[in-house]
Image (cartoon, rainbow, N blue to C red):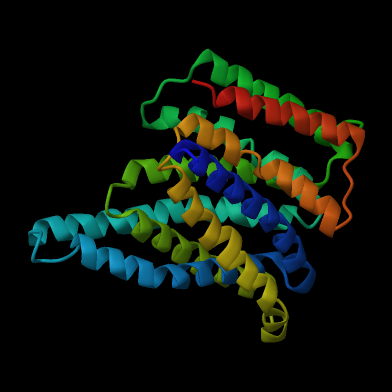
Length: 297
């Protein structure tokens, strides 16, 4: 098997794992309030990354006075703090609105609406100086048509709050990707990831305590789902993504990983008995077409 085919298979597995994440998120909502589930899983993900981050720090000497001046270390610490705050804010917006949206939106529908982040990302890149191609604008318009077909049943009154919240989550994820690209370098990727997880988890937990009044009993009841969400779609999925992208080009990688939405729909039907209507499937197909077209070179 060629390295490219091996990478493609790894990325396909990544898309499958991410697709199952929508199922565990729906199950999480069944046992505890959404902000509580979101905050706990983010904190767990941050803790899981701790040994990986420490190992990376030792290997790279990123914050070690043996390899860098005090000025360089202070600059890197401030950069990490800024990255954790900014990326964490956008991650909080993306993950929280998606989780709350899943209260009224099926796993498959959430997967397709969330995937619009792929065409939002180039648009948000304008803020940091990138140019937007005409095709990107067309893809965004096409994705919005798909969202309308999928969600606007009989006008605005036919939508649920979850439809709009999930669309906001797509914008949040796109902004988070742009923010990460502004701060990430060869040695700080894991540190930024951990920092944003900690920020998202801590702030989310404060919001949950104030707004939801979570109980330890509810959290303990959701431990199996939380463990799955932390280790499989989060730790496992993102690790496989990094490995898979070593062996294939970025356009192919993005196309394969966008299948996450398709698997979310399939697993939603299998495990949650969620069946999308013909109208929703048509809208999903338009959104998927927009994301595929938007990834072409």
